[in-house]
Amino acid sequence: QVQLVETGGGLVQAGGSLRLSCAASKGTFANYAVAWFRQAPGKEREFVAGISWSDGSTYYGTSVYDRFTIYRDNAQITVYLQMDGLKPEDTAVYYCAASLFRLTTTPRRTADFGFWGQGTQVTVSS
Image (tube, rainbow, N blue to C red; front, side, top):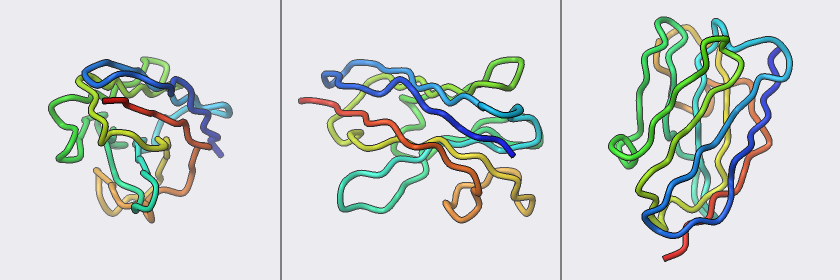
């Protein structure tokens, strides 16, 4: 089973950029949907962006679709989240997740994902 390791979080000023990485430490992401979620203090975990297991197409949450980009390397070992135009409301712990859920090609519920990383903190100052 795949294990996920996130890196790349940190502190950035509003308007800045960060890139998060999610590496598969065992195996690859082939046949998995992979997504990024985030959770701010006192809030529910929120879907941010995903890559479909079926054709590699990408899909986004409404609050980030025009600022964030999810992509993966050709070896399907690492998935990235490029975050541009960061806002203070983007501050959260960001989690990478992988899914073998097959009832949809674009899973976005936390319950659809069975494999999670440990999370990485992103803080955006105003």
